[in-house]
Image 1 (cartoon, rainbow, N blue to C red):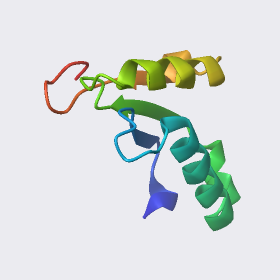
Image 2 (image 1 turned 90 degrees about the vertical axis):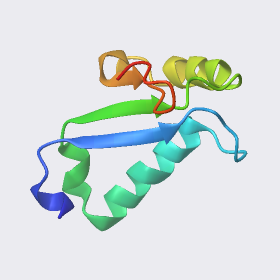
Image 3 (image 1 turned 180 degrees about the vertical axis):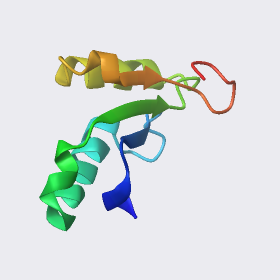
Image 4 (image 1 turned 45 degrees about the vertical axis):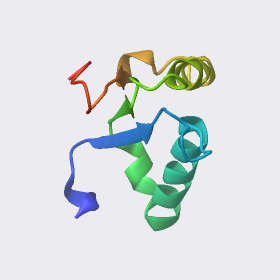
Length: 86
């Protein structure tokens, strides 16, 4: 159960292949956590921006990092396909 976790891991699609942005997905997930149980937002967290091997990912990652300044140490760029950043 999510209430028993010590850390939250947000794995976000950085490719934008489905017409979504990682920033918007992140906002939605945080909103859902708040609706479920606001104390979940107090847990430490890490963000993994996945699919960075995709051409469009660079633009999405840049935008995400610009918007979420101050959380840089908690953002990792990964590619499950190539193993980059793993």
